[in-house]
Amino acid sequence: MKFIGAWCFLFLWAGVAFAQDHPTFGLAYNETENSSLNYECRLEGTGQLLCEFVQMRVTKQALPEALETELAKARAKFPNVQKEFEDPASCTEVRQFVGFLQGQVDINELVQTKNGRPSDFLPKMKEARTQFRSKPESFNVMLKMADFCRTKSEDDYLSLVRTAHDQDTRTCRISTNRFTQKFRIASSSNVAVWVADEGPQGECGIVQLSRFEAEKLGSDGFLVWTYVARKAVTVPQGETALGKCGDIVDEKEYRFSWKDRGNIQLGCEWIKFSAY
Image: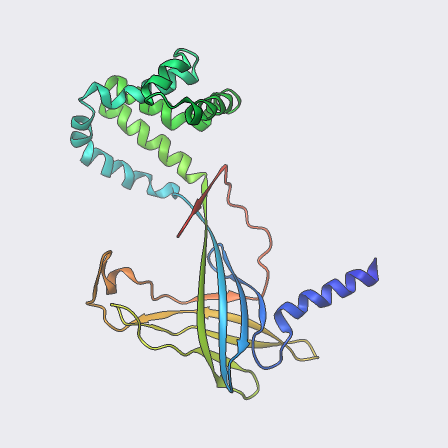
């Protein structure tokens, strides 16, 4: 077993230190955020490197310290929300769904609400009722929504916002992002550095300043690689659908180290998969 373990250890090291002059493949960990990068690189000519990346990121849906800001926004828009819910029909489905969860509404009534599509609807409702019985706190937001529908009061609306925010603080969002980058060798001396080799792109004229930095490990001189992500906006006044380039593009530097950060505790009770 020790012999097998030693070979496994050497194989894992190969993932970060197989080549002595350029990165090949490996896993790098963001030093400040909860994200990682899988990368695979291949030479495409003298001093030219093409790398494919898959980034995985885990973030909290909301932070506890953002609650007061959310409440302030809710108070400001409450008059408009109250008008939207003046029509009793706006809360019909909420009341019926909560009534069904609590065993006060027959499922046939819900089927009629959904225009008679029981084949899609019934299994999901039965699953929801089972989940409600085993973990009712999962439906706290819906219950608070039903309270607000009943009273239309600002207090119940703010209680709904607080409950939704609390659930978001215990919800972790998982996203992945695939991208490719070209690099050129910038230093072939004692320790290699590969820098992104791409011109300005898009309305913002974004220039990639990312790079791979090598570090010699141990007396054998194995190279391990840290990926440094950074980009710069060359047209800060450029306009996009999200706003001005200078306001929306993150130009901070992020380091992805070969050093494993170990287990990270986030306190997630719910998981939400996201495209970004």
